Each structure stands twice: as structure tokens, then as C-alpha cells.
Image 1 (cartoon, helix red, strand yellow):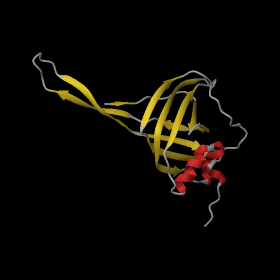
Image 2 (spheres, helix red, strand yellow; image 1 turned 180 degrees about the vertical axis):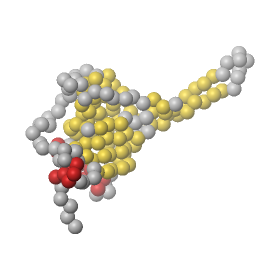
Image 3 (cartoon, one colour; image 1 turned 90 degrees about the vertical axis):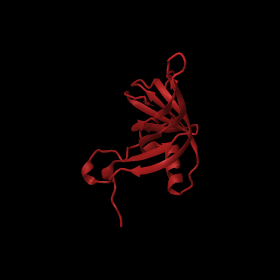
Image 4 (cartoon, rainbow, N blue to C red; image 1 turned 135 degrees about the horizontal axis):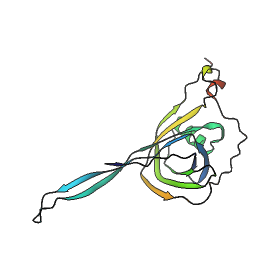
Length: 167
């Protein structure tokens, strides 16, 4: 049995280790699963069922690196093979940047790092960094305040067509 919450609004905002991480282009929350434990029939003829130890799956996110801040630092740590645990908070905001719901993820450890394919034919496709990470503990939270971001919207997004391969 898996419990997974889907998001269908407009703005994913990330905070990594308490620092503003910018906006994500995609986010897949971790799954939360528990094994069903059944007890044999008792004298009352009722089967009792309990949930065993929960298992938390991996989270996945994608972001453009034009103004990613701590997400760039995290990417550099992975590339230098100097990986440490981090805490992440992802808020889901509507078109008015009001938080609808959020998820706090503690004890995260990167598992995979990937990059978009560079191709001059892609035109306006964003260059994205794809990150998959394991989550030790998580907590869903209700919405409330507006997203607080100190990032400007003046940085030009990196596109897949803006790169020239060398070598």
C-alpha cells in the first residue's frame, strides 16, 4: 500500500538547509509505504490488521541552474564526491505565491544526479539538473503564508541550445 500525494498547481519553491534554493521545474515527493501485518483469527472471528514499519521512498526534483543557490552548492558537493546529509523543504504555491501545502524532508542523501541533453535543435527547452535523493524522515504540512524568495526574476534561464561542446 503506497500513499503518494500529487501536486497540480504552479510553483514549487525549495529551501535547502534553511537557505532559499529557488524554484523547481519538477518535483516528485517521496512515497510512504507500510507493510500490512495480519494476525490470525481470534476467538471473536475477526482478522486484525496492523501496519508494519513504514518505508520512505526517494524524492525527485528538477531545476534550472540560473538562480538555484544552495542547489548549485549541493550539485558541486556531489560532483566533488563530498556528499553530506541535507534537510529540504518544498512548498507548493499557487499563482499568487501563497503556499497551498508543503513537505519537510529531513536527513536527505543524494542518490543520482543527471543533466539535460544538450542539443541546438531544442530551441527554448530549459537546461535542467535532475536530482534523486533518499529521505530519512518527512512531514506534510498545511499551507499558509506566501512564499518568501529573495531571488530576482532577471536572470536569464539556461537553455539546452546555449551550449557549445568542446573536446
